[in-house]
Length: 398
Ligand SMILES: O=C(O)CCC(=O)C(=O)O
Image (cartoon, rainbow, N blue to C red):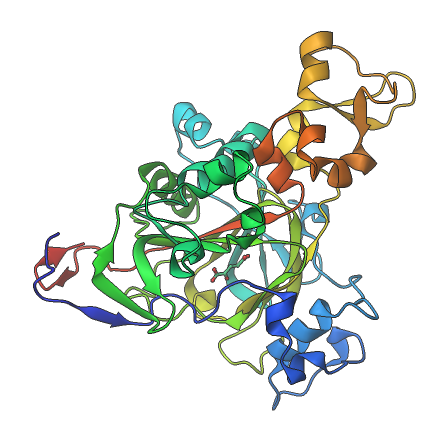
C-alpha cells in the first residue's frame, strides 16, 4: 500500500460513538426518570441534547411523539412551521438512477429546517427493490474482509468467515443480532478514535457512485466517499449524541441512508446546550448534514416499528374485497401473477398491519432473509468524505 512507510494518523475521524443496545447503556445517569415534554426543556446551561436523548429513549412512561417532525406529511409546496421545502438539482441519467435503485427525481420531496440550516432531508428516493438491494449489500457483502466489523474486533468471527453465510446456514446462533457496525474505506479505530492512513480498504464503487449522485443533488459536485460506517440497530439500540468532527475535510457533507425499521433522529447544534429537532426517519430516507449543520450534534434515541414495509411496496395492492392494503407474499405473487388483485384469504397474504410482526419471521418472508432482517432491524449507512479534493498528504493525492 502506498504511503505506508510514513504512517500518518489523523485525529478522530469518526464519531466517538457506536450503536449500543439497552443493556450496555445502563449507566446510573441513564436510569434517571426524566419528566415533561422535551419541548418544555429550555435550560441552555445544560446538556440539552442528552436530556432529549434520554427523554425519547425512555420506556416508562413512553415519550410524547406528537411534536416529532414528520417530513412524510410535509408538502413540497409550502413551508409549515420550521419545515421548508428544499429544491434539489437533478441532471442524472435514467440508467444511473436505476442502477442506484432510485426513483425518478421529479417525484422526490426534500426539506430543510429553518431552525437547522444545512440539514437536507430527502424523503425516500429509493424504489422498494433499491432498498432491498442496498440492505442486501450491507448484510451479504460488506461485513467481510477487507472491511471491518465489531465481530472481528470481539473475536466472534474467524478470518475468512462470512457473517451472513453463517447466519443463513443456521450455524451462527445468536450471531445475527451481534453485528453492530461495519467500517468501509478508511477504518475508524474505536479505541484511539484515529484514522490511520495505512488502515484502509477499497471503498465500494457502487456506494461511492450513489453518494456522489446524492451529493450532486444538493450542490456538492465532486463529492468522493472515502469512509463509511454501516450501523445495525435492533429494537433496543440507541446512538448517543455525538459530532463527526475530525474528517480532514469538514466542508463535505455527511450522508446518511436508512433502511428497515424507523427511528427518531435528533439534530442539535454545535453546542450540547442547543435544542435539537426531533424527526422521524423511515426506510429509504436520506439525511444530509452540510454546511452549518456539518458539525452539529446528532443522535438516535429510539428505534420504532416501521408502520409499512416500504421495501415491499411494489408488491402491495388493495384487496379487491375489503380495500385494505395487503402485501402479497412472493409465493402468492408467483401463483396469482404480478398484476392479480389480492384477496383477503387467510394465510395467503399478509395484512399491512401484520407486516412488522410477520416480516420479522423468515418463513413469513417466504425465504427473503434480507426483507426479514429489515422487518425487525434498522440499517444506517453513514458516508463521509475524509480529504479535500487535491489534498496532498505524505505523497498520497486525494
Ligand atoms: O443511524 C443514524 O441515523 C445516524 C448514524 C450516525 O450518526 C453515525 O454513524 O455517526
